[in-house]
Image 1 (cartoon, rainbow, N blue to C red):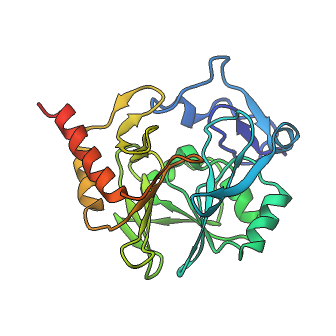
Image 2: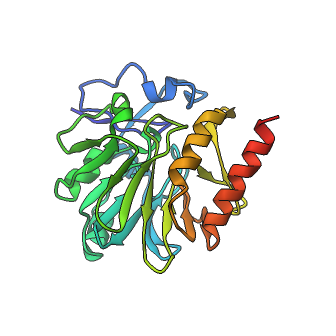
Length: 267
């Protein structure tokens, strides 16, 4: 049986003899079905067409897919005092990438911000020795490749150790998550997916319910996000794709972005 992958969002489904009828993640109003309709690929076919880029992004080991495929998110390896965290996933798994992660000390757990980036999370976990995948329980319904390797955490805050905390920001998805890494001496870092998302100017963050369909995030959700992030100290904000980072002044940039949003939305 094949594990089919949606061509539009890059999510890998549970093994099956035939492709699913449709991708529920793409049918949702936050995403979209490709203009040619629903199409599928397999991991083997994907590996024949694409390779992974392995390098450094703002001081961290980063991995993404070369060429145009699905959503262009990248993975980051965070060597924290609470263990090595693989932040986000991509659709393709290669022996070279797995070897590079092992050379860097291996992976203790995978953490993913929201369903659009679930991609091939189970295949990555298996390739890395069956490490746990941490997802917020509010997004459990969006898991299309169930596995005992997935661990659901609940609530708004989840400490992985003394220096890493997961925060449910909500807004984009009910369980949308950011990761805060306290690197000491006020030099913390915030790792975000789409809630909030680092803007193209890399001086602000934005708040949308749907980015491809230009649907704004409700004001109440953004206020809740602001409150949950209020106590965190960080200088850097790592966005969802390669180079989309705010390096230095991240706390001030996020605060200014909240104020800009409220000024535009609340009249």
